[in-house]
Length: 215
Length: 250
Image (cartoon, rainbow over all chains, first blue to last red):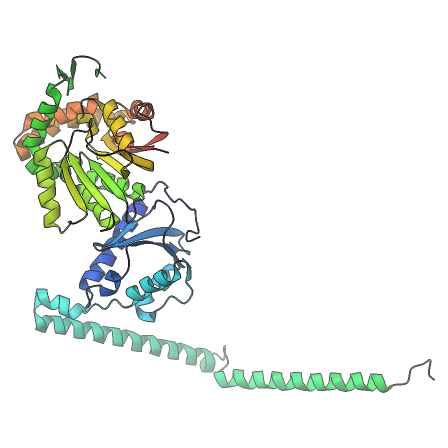
């Protein structure tokens, strides 16, 4: 059963759902238009309807794929050809991770996998598209600034994490270091082994002790 | 409803039965070129939401066949064509040649081709075999039809079993205060806007009057059931300014 909610999902849709569907449709089709391969992977898909169920926000979308692109709607007559159940955060991170590790696929699994791969492989060269409006030089400068900003953000994030870690471990002594944790774990393991050995030894001594009846 | 009389309403006036088609044709010939822009201005763009909602509720999918009756300039046809794909088919049908021509040119210019047919047809005598379409829509067109009962019967006939009819039409406002404001807008502002934008005050006066003469929600629902539909329901949009009626053939 591709549909986790109901088999015939023709329900009333509110303004928010309409807006969300339209927004997703616009984003997907714009991404396909800007893709370096012009969404060739999507064109390879057969005409189909794919259900996208976002578990964390409890939202269903039906993605209707045809030669004209992707249409997104909140209802579908009958069942979708394939269903992808995932979480919004995982879907947003798809471009970075390249896969939906925790997604559940049902219906035509191969079709769902093909669709996910097509989404993950969208490759948009922002500088190239920007250069059509601003010229190469400005587009390059903007791109360089964006890359520098992303790098600086990553570095600052790493530095903040390191500083906080050192403060908690060495200044406040609130948290142990990695080595301390490993030593503690080793000691616990050793103690466990020794305890097991003593328990075994006591068991053997008890077995060797003569019974009262025998005495 | 005066469909058994020799005259019928044309807005607030009565005209001979056979005259209504010509008069409606005259109205739409007059407004065809500026129909889209006028719709946007008159409804402040909300007609796009009403249509989008209709498309959503249709649940249409690739491979299906759709009749967009009174399809006019092709708003719904475009959306349906994108959804049914090349394995499906959409027929844009309208009694008015000018509207079909504008719609056809517009869709072709937007790259919608190959799965759309265009035809000039009277809603009361549809030129299609029985059980042809999975979905039939008539958006803002039924009130202009002379014999609405006959048109509904025809729509029922051409639907496949399991098919659905969607009638999107102006209806009766449910909120009294809004109703007064809406009346003022319709009879005082709308015709003036028609004159300003399309240089045609009379046609827009007719549009306002025809909306008031159109059956209300419950009456239209009953008409659909009388026409043979096995189930009918309606959904008010914008406090009943527009209602979406849906009928199913089982």
